[in-house]
Image (cartoon, rainbow, N blue to C red; front, side, top):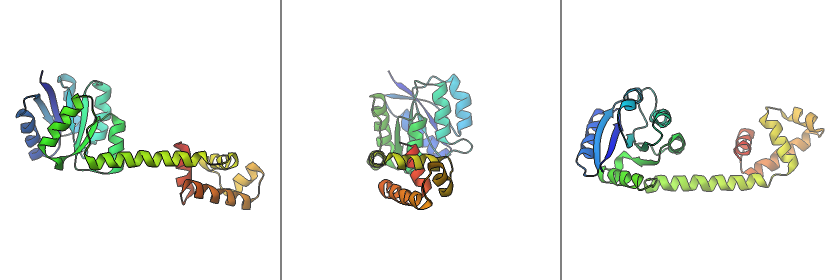
Length: 208
């Protein structure tokens, strides 16, 4: 059975090239292509589709927003981000929105088709450079989680207060300790979490 594929891409030449790429394969059937998220969301409700090649930098809603909305409407459809961006935040936002893979347009048609094959085999295709970013990010998260676990109960109390927007003086009054003690605890927190600001410290603590 040929898998049905749609494309969301705002660059006309690239959209046409990708459409031809799908049409020249044996395993896939090209269904339709859309130039923006709004058009895709409106028309894909009436199109039988198995996978969507999604660009990120679209006019109006981004490809990430488009995936999020379409995933709610079409939960069984697989999404493969096919983009020029290798930005960490965009990678993770795409995966969080519901994409199953993330590859670069510069990888070329053969790798894009191979990525579709992998997608339908249950995999999560990513270029090697993007996979390394994902692994590095998870390693960093694990290190940060481990660092948070080294905090004392008093240091966690202080972070709780900072997270509520308390200033050092307010923290001292709340916990009945001196300002100097608060500063010393905050310095230890920075060292343990390997951060330089209270914003970084609070963000790490809240993400634990």
